Length: 289
Image (cartoon, rainbow, N blue to C red):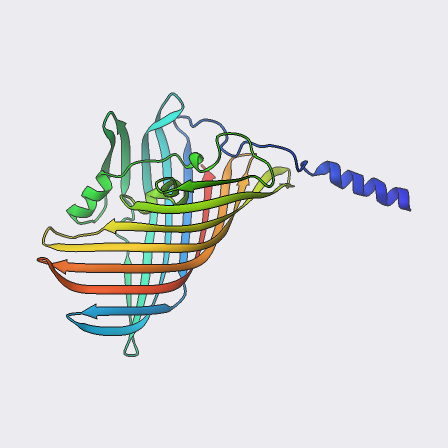
């Protein structure tokens, strides 16, 4: 019996990747024609809301839900680096609910649904052409100045193993968080990663990563020159990534807190200021088409 148990244990150990094994998380260089479909689902539970309008302070609750499905196709590659990318927003829907004085107001935004962004690298940076988006001209201008960061760059440029750690900062967070979902936004902060497991599931090699995020997104969503709308979103929390090293697809989860600040000014005078703090959950998948 002991020999049988020992043989079974040995077989299981041999079936698992060695802890010392180093793997390439980035995968092969991108190729023209490659298409990735990213699905991002964000859910915030009701949180505190404070709003100041013309000196009057109002308090209530706020919650949001959003789903973005983005089909991103690499059109051109130069020396292993994408130089022309097209992103189509197959689905882009967000719903926010605010409650004040016992009354709930629900707003739905689908302005980016059907939009197509074509980003081309030039000698001076990136140029973005926007089609099909029902956005103010100022918002379109913000998108036109958006750059592109290859999402593979989130992972180290050399093989890593269980227990290895690394960090990304500022604009690199843009790639991780789905830059096409928030085009033109500015990212600041840090994410710390650790590879915690390497296993086989259904014949596929899976790297499991844990991460901590502490970052801020800022956006200028001004609808016209005389009306300024500035938004900042701070996110802090923990998450996990499942990186499929057989086909280089990714699934990830994040849970933490979101602090949102929005300030609106009209003709240089503050018209409204809003702050909200909400528990937040994000699920994201990237699949090859």
